[in-house]
Image 1 (cartoon, rainbow, N blue to C red):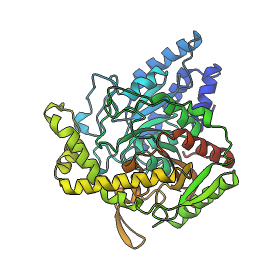
Image 2: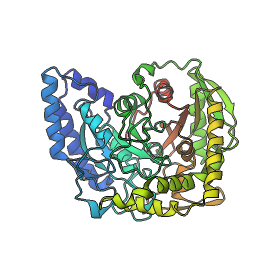
Image 3: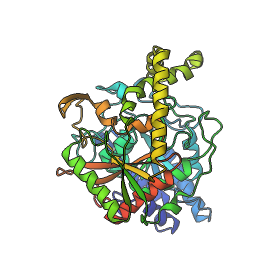
Image 4: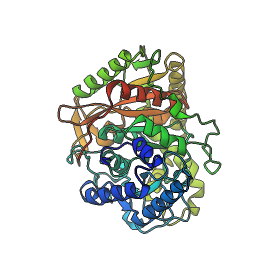
Length: 463
């Protein structure tokens, strides 16, 4: 099989039928990762020894008739903010490069219970570390001079370059969806509380989320099926029934109601982004969807309140227990607590009220539509190392420009997905964002999978 262009689902089929062994598959992905990583800087740690241990164990179990499911023996990665007891967890800080936690993150536990083989930890590029992240910039496999997104950019670069078949990142303002858009992947920000945050260094309470990055919607459904679910160790975990996500992937989009915002999401767009996303919405219509205009008059206010709410609530949650923080606590958490402690009560209350108003507007919209469709980002992947932009007659910093269209859903908590919907004339990926009602991940995956099937999906990959 061609490991560079393989999907997780294809690899799983070959493992289940014993046409490919987990050892063979993991060895191939480790070899590719070691070859490409000096150029891409997607991984900050490659766990060859534990990966081969788990691959051999998976092979033995499968040969013994103990097949666990579609992740069994499949090589994946996780962002270097998730605790792993057999690989370093450094949170993007060189000073913690040798830190080994004493417990695994919840998503690591669940992935390994499903038989997945974690081959390494990916670069956690944080906005707070611009313009010089401690672990260096990750490069975009589609164009090495372009940014592959931020925060979960290492995960995105790894999957899109064939260095692992899936990854798990975190999304505090678009940090799964924006890298997915920049690298041609499917990136899911689930409903708040759907995926446990236990054992993850997340610094936005409650707007930071854990979600998978994959090549296809079906692969994303497979990953989400494993990592979703209640966890009493996470105080924000939602105790809800988890559907069989794969059952939604019928390819039939007849009658699906797709909402298109009449404002905000279409401001400041690069012409190729707008044309490509509108064409994708037309393709949804051609596949049987009903396209409906949806006004969202206050959605723009999320950019005014997102950071204040995130940092204020983070400070309120963590400040009382700061004395108990271990020495390896990442500096980014201290920075956010410090800034959040300066938020005025009057400002916070007004922002809190506005968030509730916007949530109600979105909830009302989902009484009339099944999903909202928007661009994932304003621009195609920007030049690597550029942090200030003069675009559409105004000045932008990369964080605000990149997260403008994704951040509103972190503020409200609704699930959102980015998927590839085409390319610029220069061959750079463009993302379509889909949004659903709370715990509507199956609907997002159904529409994304249906669009992939209607259009053929991404038929080319970089490198």
